[in-house]
Image 1 (cartoon, rainbow, N blue to C red):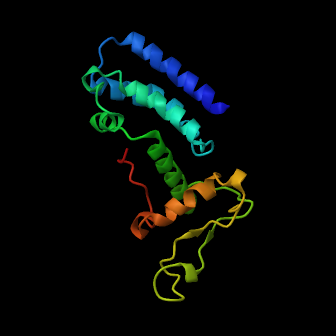
Image 2 (tube, rainbow, N blue to C red):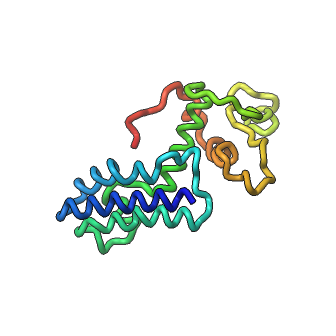
Image 3 (cartoon, rainbow, N blue to C red):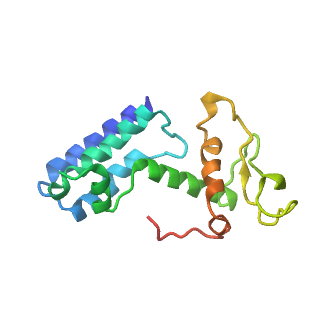
Length: 180
């Protein structure tokens, strides 16, 4: 499994950092973790997405263990450690990455030759006056809805979350690069 290699590599790098730095504060940890370990855990997450709960938990446990390296917050629970360090769960970051990629596809920053292209919802599914398609930017998940093996493909995974975003967010021309 690919996730086992990712976990092993992230643990290896984390061990090297742990041996190299004897004292940890929140600032040092955040810089080192976000530079060396988190990119390994997030690499290719849009294309390869862990969907089994067991896989997600094992990948998240790397970050959970890593946050215990900071002695001042070691005894706090995981969510409090994340807040103190200014980090998000890896699952939240994967969702954010999916939405950014969907934005790039929608705005034609990236192009994919879809076998069956993602289509706009018919106006009968959108909110507002009947027949109004002016502000209809909801996407329709038409492919592989009932196929459990393909349920976690990019389009099936991201379109429900994309449709929940406010119109103003989806209609922006550029992404805000200042958000982490």
